[in-house]
Image: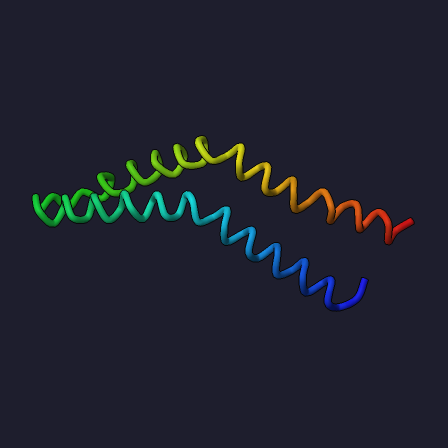
Amino acid sequence: MDSDAVLRIGREALLLTLLLSAIPVLAAMAVGLIISVFQAATQIQEQSLTFVPKIIVTFGALAIAGTWMLQQLIQFATPLFEAISEIGG
């Protein structure tokens, strides 16, 4: 395995990490923005009001997109493990 292949694998891994983490992070950011606007309008400064909905939305996003995320991980890992087994023996 040459250095170009290692760099390609590393680049693909970082891109996949960014893509898979974007779904729950963007969902939590959207809810956080909505809640912060609500808090600014009503002047309610309760910390649990921001934390609990973000957790619920993050888990919901993971539940909805979880199968797609797992498929993406499998599509990345399967050729990688096959390449490792070819190198090893």
